Length: 360
Length: 74
Image (cartoon, rainbow over all chains, first blue to last red; front, top):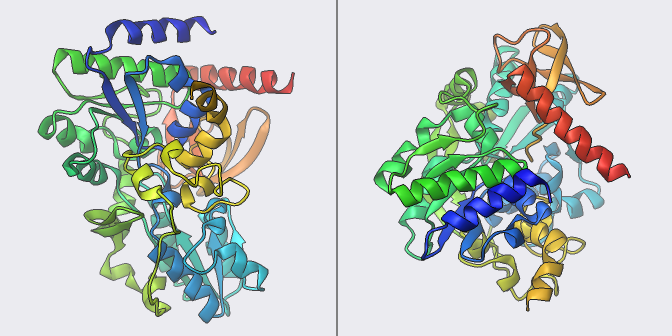
């Protein structure tokens, strides 16, 4: 074992609070890194790492997915999406199923590809599926500012952007959820800085540490959390200070709020949470695909037996779902947490299934 | 998906910069980093630079990743 990792692990084992501690990460890349590096198995059992709602694809509601599918079925549009979204099952099909039926669904790496396509094909209506937290919403904002400046008339976004800090508050208010501290996302915080988490530390007396993605970063952050917890002085600390500044990236944060404003948002398995999403401001409402391409959605349903909602809230671990690794696998996923490579179920399936089996 | 490997800006033309990381070159949009200049290190997310990184820290992280990638090849 790497010496630095060993030291940090030993320090956690020595200083951990006697009654155990539940620490939630709210970033899909943290989830992946913890699973891949085997950190959970390395730590004492009562330092309990819980995965929260940090994977953008996973938190997108069935209703929103059904609406995207409805748009591509009913309107002659070209729809651009990030890779993971295409395989998420809606109530009756997925975007991938629709593509195999001849619909024009494309995967993009950068949202700019979608705007470029709209520019080059002015007669074709182009919809970009805008998902993600504060890391991604500034990108969508740049896109829309540019589309407005250039007066591009055939470009729309299907918007499901969500906000991290108010979602953390909703988790605090849910009595079923027992979280003692948050491992806060690195790149969301590169945009928003550390201040938006301060009310979580103060009002809910919950330590928050903004962490980098390497195993050493995460172990350092866990040490910082445990020290705060033991001292009874919850605050927001930045472990990932090589990238995250207390003020974040003010230009990017300004871009978000030039285009968007806080609105209620639907979260998979959790429901509608007040002011946890971003909606288009009036000045940008003409880019709203949900309004331009209305669809009748009778009844959106979560896949039968799927526990993604409870997994996203950290109430259940992926192993606790009866479908996990039985009927739901990365090859044939039933819920979104098994689809996305950074979904908790996919990460636990790929990296922690063996360790879990041996434990049982 | 957050990619944590910093990249170096080699060339800037308007909003677009050519960047290089571990030998891979790419074009990214830098409009969210108004004061980015040639030689700076940045974090890239979905085709956009979103944050500046100090040079020493960037090189240390690149080194860590190179080690990891080399180990995967062995």
